[in-house]
Image (cartoon, rainbow, N blue to C red; front, side, top):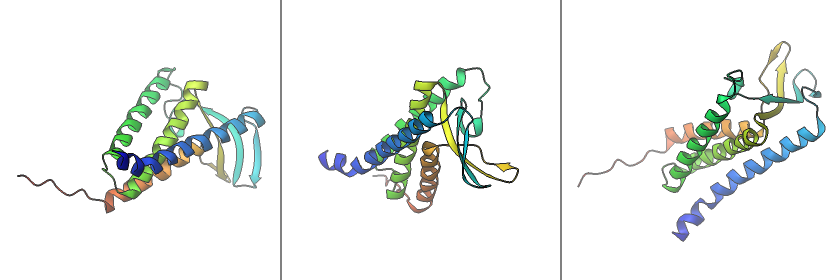
Length: 165
């Protein structure tokens, strides 16, 4: 049991680091920006801004009337519980465990926003001419990179089929 705890500790620390980094960046933006204010960092490519997302990725269901907050909270908790169990049960390879930990940290970072503010705080805005990628945050970045790692792990890490006795 002690070895099991020690072997998964790095994944819990990664998830915690994602949460802390996400929340520090969001607090900093909240302290320094008014809603919809933009600060150009790289001309014609990248701005810092402050926007709120009551929905999910790309503002999916943002105008749904309020029930989506509880839906996304519940979904995030269920996904985190599944991924945490899979880490503990050693169901992923190393790459998959890193990805799962990143998703857990990112999802919980956004859960904190929904619980404290009723919406997710987004502030990273990339664009080119008339094309804009929807604003996102550090938690979203962890979730996306984590998802890629999980997919890559799925191609590389195969569980041995159980042998019937």
